[in-house]
Length: 285
Image 1: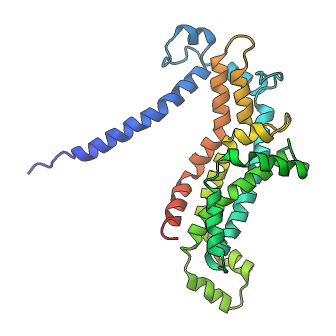
Image 2 (image 1 turned 135 degrees about the vertical axis):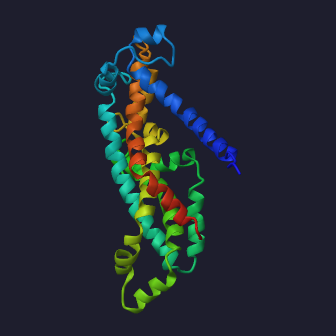
């Protein structure tokens, strides 16, 4: 008997290819446009390949494009974002790990209420915290600074990192923790010897989640970032909306790709850990 053609599997693969094309075509347009000359952009088709590869638009987007009154390109703002994102991600993830460890294995009276309260923080819109956060930054004398932005993102991200770690750590057998406590191990020894070595997948989840949220944030950056502390997203907005001179779409596209490269690189390097950590944390809790 002749084998039947797997039409169902073929339909699934066709649907996946169409979805991939749907998401990749805009990226192709951005990338191709960034290498085109202005003349080809005006006279050619949107999907045309560049007639000749030129990195002039990339060089201008990085080093000399105007983002308002300043014409320094994205470079200084790109490094502002790095100085903001790296410490904010590391600190919020570490604190979230300790919080999740406590809420999963060192429960106390009211711990479930505290966890529920923290979860409410995951659903509070950014706009709600702007005024109280601005007041707090002013009192601490860190308004309009990179340090202030780091503090804002740590505070806002703790609810998410605590939730991720708590849901992951409840999958660690309680008997393992109890046995360590009977043997005399304390809070930090158990964390260091048992919990932390098991935490690579969920750490990668939080790293990717927090870095993406912080790097792509615009609202906090434009509100709390001073002229010397604005992140790359604010600079990109200013560059695209600058109305002086000829509109250079190739420079705009190059700038947008430069701003997106760190998050794209992070997903390519650690994306498998993101999925693994989410599925492991979804088993129970």
